[in-house]
Length: 463
Ligand code: SAH
Ligand code: SF4
Ligand code: F3S
Image 1: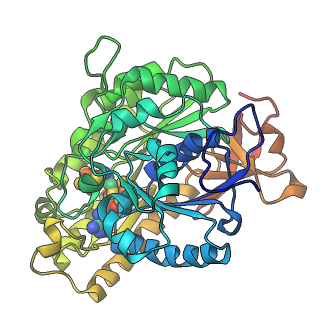
Image 2: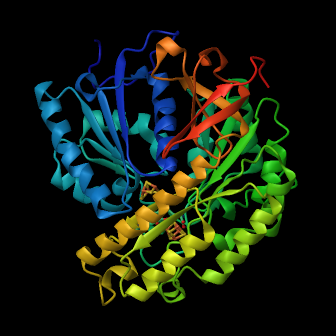
């Protein structure tokens, strides 16, 4: 090891990496993308990823502020990192990135002296510079202003691609201000990457063997990046351009807001085969009264109408969603409306959470906070209904022949098992298929379990 912690110059001349980087990621897919990009930014300095923090020269916790538990986890994890750092006589740099860094940067530095630097989600392209400054003086903190355009302009063109699927952030931030949510405060206001920049990254991914991209944004369907004509483009138009890229066979996107589900986006689901028939469209609650208190700016009927239109455009569309139970003032009747909505929509998968009051959000000071025991009971009832629907959806694929994109080897080496994805984002386990990784192949589905499908090849030739 040659690391001195004061020398952060590029390794240069293709020298082997000499520093080890450990990144732990919490929260949403946008953080997963950011973690990959942080590794890209640090690669020219000679940092190579390691799976364990014990031997890492640089540890980054990429954090999430969405619920209290997520945010608190960071402090306990930092406690563990401090012990590791002490065991190495201090020869470890610790950074906190992501949404907790943005929201509570100062508090982190005060609460955990082992932390060397704090970097917000729109500032991590400055990590090399920050590292150099930190080597001189602890306590660098960047991220108060939101300038995603600077970040994307500064990120390296080349990505460390690992596998045949990839995330691609096209939109950042949120202007919706749902009364329970911290995202508008941690990520800033809505901003979209220009079409040319998205296409360049997508082409690069396709050239390196990626066959499926998931476009990301806190409100990805509010995308309005600058198009080639200098005018704002819609997400649907971006999909049409992406569909032209050779080798890019599947497109997904997440997360969408019902109010930004535009006509051309719905139509794109009917027009573009590359757009996968799985849509994450969170509604949070089925009660009009609670939706109003949440400032969601639409009612349950609008959600039902949207889903009817989406299913008309793409009859095999599988729906996914997010739900919050125990929002302040939620009555049994309101909760029953949520259960009713879930029964009517029939989800293929969904996430559900107990409401968590977040500092600075309007809902956190609303009267009639629901007792934990009540929320907990409601969460169990909702989750068992959603699980039932997920099992039924998976079981409904049995007997079908479906295209599967093989992603990786399975656990059963002796059976040459491979794991892939169905169009509906289900994991599919297939024996004698580990030579097909990276290919889209028809698979006959034998069984649908709670969390995956099992099937067999019907032919050896790749699609
Ligand atoms: N932009 C997306 C959601 C981003 S946050 C949307 O509008 O749907 C991801 C999910 O976390 C939300 O959909 C919501 O279900 C949940 N969530 C956000 N804030 C929360 C809070 N304070 N307590 C519990 N769950 C919350
Ligand atoms: Fe949060 Fe609402 Fe914005 Fe989604 S739309 S990120 S829930 S404020
Ligand atoms: Fe969490 Fe930030 Fe994503 S708060 S959910 S990591 S945008």
